Image: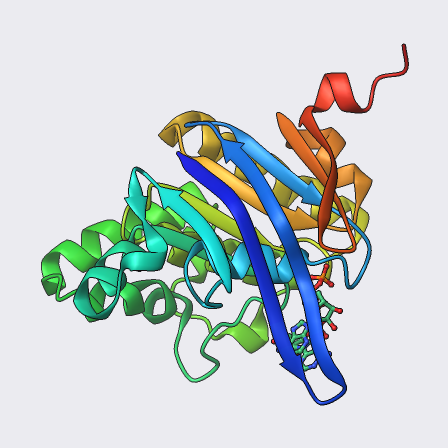
Length: 232
Ligand code: ADP
Ligand code: ADP
């Protein structure tokens, strides 16, 4: 579903060049949960942000569902981005909009009819367990509830891939577990491919099928979680 080949990203920093990613290659199969783990500064954010072209690679290829992302721009890139959902560490909800309207937002942008939006948002609220919070504002929600809204919003346009950028890092352990369970549930129900970055081993061990360990812009280990993290 996602194939990254020889991806290099060099930033022009004030103190010279920073090689954030150095010839990174990996493959995420359809329907799996793939985790990328590493310390701060390892290159995780850069990597995940290259998948939907929030960051332009310096070199290399990124295929999502057989489309070369680096060759897309304009409406083709926007159309492809709609099919790549993303959730964030700090949720990135619109504080002036209700839960319902936050989830409706990407559908409005896509030009979906009011009737269809009502139907979809109602279903999404049920999926993430927030049916009773539709008219509430983000400030009135707990962190876990905010992330549930983030997940519902990310699923609104029926994505083929879900990107998770440290999605549980701002949450306590119990809330983290419930969000991970929700992601696993969605992965199974929708057969949705999920790519996540994290610095927490718990995230990898609880729900990931495959893992890549990244250090200094290099992938130093990669494979099935049971193979990479099980002692011989
Ligand atoms: P992680 O997500 O694993 O913490 P990042 O991808 O954020 O790692 O960063 C990788 C490296 O690239 C770090 O050395 C970081 O300082 C550098 N970096 C990230 N973004 C920029 C930027 N916009 N300009 C310059 N350097 C950057
Ligand atoms: P996180 O590690 O939580 O992803 P960071 O604090 O590393 O967040 O980065 C926040 C933002 O700053 C990102 O957009 C990243 O690209 C940018 N950034 C990170 N490191 C640098 C850097 N050395 N120079 C310029 N921008 C940076």
